[in-house]
Image (cartoon, rainbow, N blue to C red):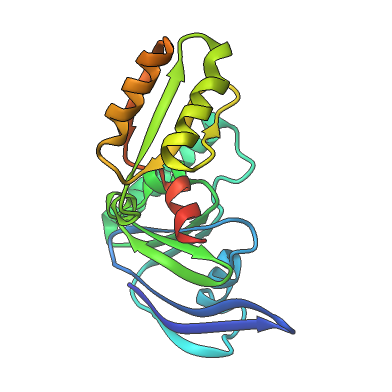
Length: 216
């Protein structure tokens, strides 16, 4: 297994790792999820013994696989093959720690996810636990007529005070929702405005949305 406590690594005036704590159990895949510059590669270099930490400590016990962005640059077919090979690794008790920028990859592969941002761990746990940690859901709506999208966006803003995120490919609008009555309120407003919707509902946030919320 891998245990990390208070790990600090600096490069000049830049702190790449700022008191990182994490645990990667044996026989499981742990994904360190974060954007470029989060400190993921530095963490792997320290654990692999390629560079020393400035503070903190870590232990690496038993068979371990350290994978830094293992599917970066691969096409979808090659990525899927690599995913399958990674899934097989814990079968012999290997502790696998991989880094990734892609929430889907972390969800598909990892038993545990460590969210890393600017050298700090902002959350860790199973994917479902992280989704629930934000304390709310995501309301999503897609108007039947694309031209109604702006009117729907105005209604959402009036109901929540939040400018909705818009998927330009699908026309889907999303806003965070901590109010269980928001969905019914939106339905009433859309009916009053005569705006039909092909898609309307609540869901748990995706890991990318969780990461943005936790990193604020």
